[in-house]
Length: 396
Image: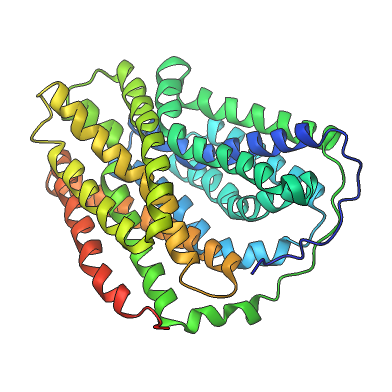
């Protein structure tokens, strides 16, 4: 069940619809890249600000936890606002926050620059695809929504490697300035080219929140938290692993991460196919592959092509679990699926934050070379939870 009334007409002609959707898709790419780009910037940022990589990693935790806590209520509170004005305001906030990040001279200013856009990311994510569907009309809504999600997926896959490449070419501050400039350009483009979209009805959040009383739904949300924790214990610090464990020179790390993201596109495709048959079985399959890939990364660090295969296996499993987790959680309810999907985004960010914390604690206490093992152990914990979740499924 949609959280919005999709029957509300679009108050515009069809002129420029394709351009409007392209602007939405690229804006989605910029906004989600803002979240993930910093992972690739962590080593350079930590060196420049004189902080440890573990402390720098908590900027990932801050962003993720902010999305987790404020995502559902803020989306419900703001989604009925005039969409064009809402999106322009969000892009201007991202432009200002990224500019603040670029100009920051210490950890705390940078933390503020991360907290502010984190409030707005789930609002954009929760409303952009539905707006694209309205702009395109019922017959082409699916294609329009897929284009917006392509921007989101591309940011998830490429945001980190783009950040790493940028850090080596223009510096981490330069990367934030680029994001600020592009966000400002998209705000202007949206102001000029995007047609007006009628207001939607305000979400009845309390009525939909009945899903939080359903054990099967809550179990699936918990599983998502553990899955994303497993993924981000090591993924948050992948640039550091490549530098300090695999011996990749800093100037080349970004390209390695780019390859990791590119191979992940295969995982995204395979995961999309596998989840149609059984979301819970697909979760189990890719968690096994994830644990093997992450656990093998250190022992195989200097084995050449075999190391690349282990890294590729990790990348495929890592990316496949994004759509699998989303579908698994949304399929666990028979109503309020939009809220279920938004809740899974919050759960994912809870896992991202926890993963960054656990990884940040692992580095000083055990060493960066243990990140893969700790991450694999959390993946095994997620596997142990799957039979428990499955038992809670309602029986017809």
